[in-house]
Length: 195
Image (cartoon, rainbow, N blue to C red; front, top):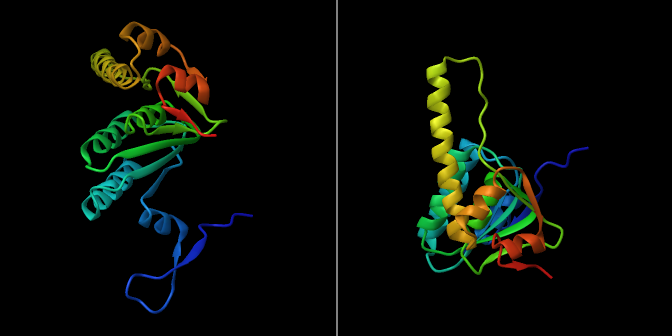
């Protein structure tokens, strides 16, 4: 039986009465954000708007992004990554389950020294993929060229943020490379494993 989104009591500053708000809104007020599904345009826009709003509200207090995501679309994921680099507050990333594919790019995009994985978390990197439906050869070639550009972009992100060599990252992205939390730390995808 689904429980829906739980509501919790909250008193706005200056209010005498308590209001009941959904738990995610309450956690957002504490600067705790969640990526708990595949990245798409709608989710990307929601996370970006939250990061920008919270940055405007207070540009000195860190944001915390909890990740449990199978990945998702590359362009909306890169929009999240770019916003994390753009906002003034540091964005701490925490892998609480799975950070696969685009989820791992967002995980590695957290403030260096402030990227964390829970002990049983899993991280996976691989090359971007696309679905080639029945299409003309010309469109197929254009899409393949775009995929190569995206792969180059993602490879550069991993190289820059992990300290691994271009050769190592390129080879590891050829297949689905799953890592435990400690392996992800050794690779440079996270800085610490939670105790």
